[in-house]
Every structure is written in structure tokens, then in C-alpha cells.
Amino acid sequence: MTNTKDSILNAAEQLFAERGFDATSMRAITAAAGVNLAAVNYHFQSKENLLQALFTRRLDRLNQRRMELLDRYEGEYKGKPIPLEKLIRALIEPMFDHAGDHPRAGNAFGVLMGRMYSSPQSSLGDILLADIRNFAERFKGAIQRTLPGIAVEDLYWRTFFALGSTVHTLASSHILQKISRGLCDPDDRQRTLEKLTAFIVAGIKASAGTGKKKKNPPRSGKNK
Amino acid sequence: MTNTKDSILNAAEQLFAERGFDATSMRAITAAAGVNLAAVNYHFQSKENLLQALFTRRLDRLNQRRMELLDRYEGEYKGKPIPLEKLIRALIEPMFDHAGDHPRAGNAFGVLMGRMYSSPQSSLGDILLADIRNFAERFKGAIQRTLPGIAVEDLYWRTFFALGSTVHTLASSHILQKISRGLCDPDDRQRTLEKLTAFIVAGIKASAGTGKKKKNPPRSGKNK
DNA sequence: GTCTATATGGGGATAGAC
DNA sequence: GTCTATCCCCATATAGAC
Image 1 (cartoon, protein in one colour):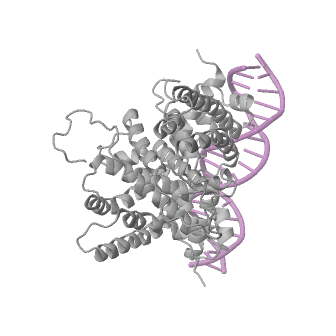
Image 2 (image 1 turned 90 degrees about the vertical axis):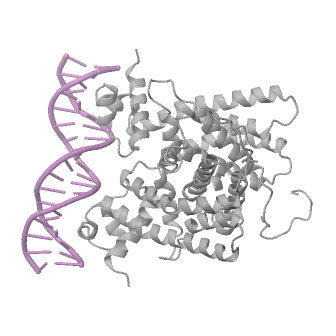
Image 3 (image 1 turned 180 degrees about the vertical axis):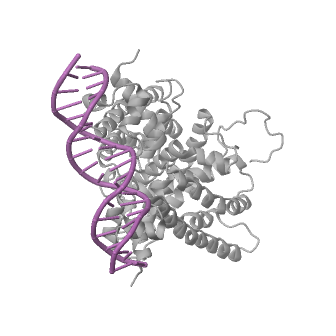
């Protein structure tokens, strides 16, 4: 049904998400995938390379999905600014949407992605950075059209914070379930997205706050 | 000047933050600390145990500091609700404040803590969970006095998101520096805290949004 | 492309002298 | 408490038969 290469990718994704990259041996991966130990090096040359292949495969689709959503909204709101909530949705919803590849996989890639954002794995750093750069410029423009008053520095900070709460949700929401004693259910994807979106939208819309510029106080009344 | 035990703790903290737990060998730690390889097992029994010792040492002080700040604010605002910004400050500012222990250490523990929140390292999971439980109840009460209208579920979700953006900032702010091409400077601790606090305060104050209950629409007007 | 067998190295931990 | 020397295991990666 699936070929060797895909079996390895799927098994690796699952195990990396569960145990972390370093703690997952190639023996465990090949055993779970039902293939021979040597197959990984044959198909991917190295374990590091396997991780990269795994990410690029997913990130391509992820960004494609983000762009599709942006395209759609730009069509809907011809010319007019797109509501911030839609933009945030386009940014983060695809990150939660990786089920279905193999049954009972949950959102393994989401968890893994959340984890890897804060990993020192250097080879991935570049890939994730490139990924962010891919959509950053376009989203930046879209958000600026929606919130013309926002300072560019704040735009960067806040989008960064938004990504932070998102990847934390992806990687560690089981903690929330424990803390809240079951009151919050991270497995309810729709509700999770609602809560997260509402938080981020409000955070990004925050007024400029105390943020006095270091020097050169703005002489135009640009930001509110 | 420092004894063997502390040297090991400091070196381990630094290296774990830089390279991650698994990727840091005990040989690297003892070399950096200038002590003998066997000293780690003599003083800490195991590498896992060293990590735990490292965290409890820091977390004790961290929560002490949080409680001090809460105490102070409760004194200042006798009876009256404490502004949300103060509460958030009390929660997150101590997480950024771990420099000074050994020169040029930066905020190694902050980075490490940020990383470990999304790690599968089971032994730490319990420690971090216990840490959160330590302050969760008290902050929960304080926030509810400041925002009497907030639903408990939202309170949990949003505090969780707040923690997410915080640990992401701790662990990965170098990414932001690259993306913004230097416009955002995560080494400016005061400014970082201002931006982060403003984002979180606004996010927590968000209106209830679409969040319709799953079933059993509330018959009392409790959570307006 | 797939397998077995193995090379090669590094890891955490410990025994036992000082 | 500190050191040297070493045990023992498990990791990634590869060579070479099928």
C-alpha cells in the first residue's frame, strides 16, 4: 500500500513527535515502519537528512494551504482590508491540520513542529527560518492593510508572540489539560482554534502601550 | 571560588541551553566545569538527576520571586484589584531574570526552560507541572479579582497562551532577530518585556469571542 | 531495493586507588 | 572528594551478498 520511503517518513514523524529526535533510534523507526534498518540510509543517507526530508515534505503543503487561504480571502474582500481574524486563521489553522495521512496519527507533525521550533537542531533552524520567510512578507503586507497604524517593530514582535502561543499549543497542550483538570480539551480542534485565534487577534490589536521609542520620538501622528 | 557541585550545575545549564540535553555529553560538561568526569555521578548519581537538580534550584528562586512581586502588589492595591499588567509582570518577568550568576551566562536558564517546556523529557515534565501548580491557583484568584467577568475555561486557555509566547520568546528569540533583520532586539530585556506584556495583557482581556458552549447552554447568567 | 553482518565510535556509569 | 581506567551498551553508518 505504501512504499518503503513513505513508511519510514510516517513512522519517523510519529516517533520523533513522541520521544524527540535524539531519543529516537533508527532501529525504532525501521521497526515501526516494518522495513530494514539499512533502508533509512539507503533512502535518506542519514538520520539528519531524514528529518529534513520529513519537514520539507510537510512545510511545502503547509505553506501551499496558507497561500490558498490568503488567496481566497483576498478574493472575498476585493480591495478592502481582510479582517484580522481571517488572516490569523490563514496563518495558524493549517498548522493544526495534518491528520488523515495515516490513521490514528493525530497531529504528530504539529507536535513535532512545535517542538522543533525551540530545538537547537541546526539543520532544521534554517529550514524553519526559510519557511517563515516564505510567508512573512505576504502576511506582513496583509496585516498592514488591515491595521494601517501598527508600527513595523510591533508587527514583528506580535506575530512572533502569536507563533509562540501556537507552537506551544501544538507541542504542549497536554499540560493545559492537566492543569485545568480536564476543563480545557486540546483535542477539540475547533474550540482550541477559536480560543487561540481570539487571544492572538486581541494581542495583535493591542494599543501601542508604553513602548516609547529609544530615540527620535515620532513627529507624525501615524500610530493612533 | 565555587565548589565542584556548583561548577557542574553552571556548566551543565549553559551547555544544555546551547545544545540541548541529549546532545550534551557528561564529558563536555565536566570539561567545561574543569572537574573530573566521575564527579557528576558522585554528586548527582545520574545525568537525568543533574537536570532535575538544576531545575529545582532555579525554580525555587523563580517562584519565590513571583510570590514576592504578588505580595508587593497586593500590599500596594489593598483590597482593590491589581491591574492586569502588574499580574502579568509578576508572572513572567522573573523568567527573564537569571543573569548574574556567572558572567556572560546571559539567560541560559531561561533558554533552557523555554526549550524544556516542549521536551518529552518525562522527569522534567512532572517538575514543570508542579511548578505551574505552585503559582497557578494564586494567580488564578488574582486575575479573577481583576477580571471578574472571565470564564474559568478562558482563564486557563489564555494563561496557557501567555506562557507559550513567553517560553517561545525565551527559547527562540534569535529567530525574531533574523526575521526582522535586526529591527527587533531580543537582547534588550526591558523592551522585550514591554512588548510581550502588552501583547499578553490585550490577549487575556479579549472579549469572549465566538466561544459557544458545546452543549447545555448555561441557564444562569454566570459567565457573561 | 533489500537484507545480514559488522565497523566504528560515543555514550553513561562504576570500581577501586589515592 | 577526586582521579584513572575501564566496562558495557547502543548508536549511526556502511560493505557487500542476494
